[in-house]
Image 1 (tube, rainbow, N blue to C red):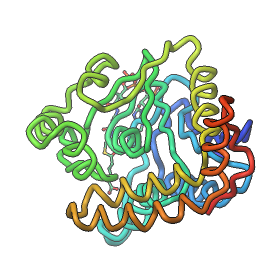
Image 2: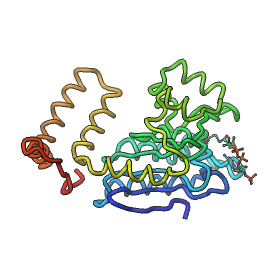
Image 3: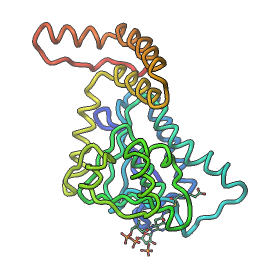
Image 4: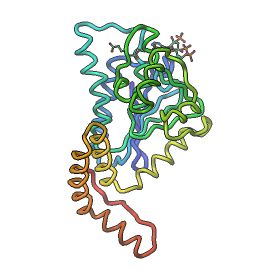
Length: 258
Ligand code: T3D
């Protein structure tokens, strides 16, 4: 199995499983992960998806030892990496990329693709592409400038320097850093916190914010109004209000995926 799957307390964890190669991607593996993400978004019991790596690496990017493209490179990238990145961005559920070790090349851009990015203190990040004279793919030319601004993004791509977690935090490449020793447990606990939030509200927030990254203000405001009308109709909204008025903690257990 190139991708391992576990489901615990609403958290579906997808683990890249080629540890001896630092989870470098074969195209078969990218497709298996893309399919697992697509199916995860439709799994009723899954409220949050986590993508992480087995062993000491997160993902070392494309496997360079078996790398060969028969046919069109453009089509291959479209069918593999693009499908994966779109499955993460367009799916209804929050996706957490949990970067346990080195994230290089397409692995770095997979790390960036999550709705929330958490790193281990052992994580490292490098836009390795230019070292083999390629351009960042797997969404890197879109996500990296949005994360750090154009100029820093260009420098990261040009130099392919290896970044540590402190720099990752400062640059906005990740939201949290957890100690390497407890990383899997910390990620599970953190993901369960997200899973306990109102699922439909998070789905609608994801839709509005993802769309907002490319919309004009007027369009974003119109979309917010439309999606807010949907959120208003959700039982979770009534539960949130009741809990506030009754001075108790809200519970959002019954929410169905939209
Ligand atoms: O058409 C297309 O779709 C092209 C798409 C391209 C997308 C890309 O991702 S391009 C970028 C590809 N990735 C890289 O260039 C990174 C290559 N790897 C490295 O630079 C280093 O391995 C790391 C910085 C990631 C980690 O270094 P280190 O010293 O911690 O580990 P290591 O000893 O180099 O690697 C451990 C093993 O993993 C080693 O195997 P061995 O010698 O023990 O049998 C190494 O060869 C293997 N490995 C690491 N990365 C890859 C890999 N094997 C194949 N492909 C890799 N990318």
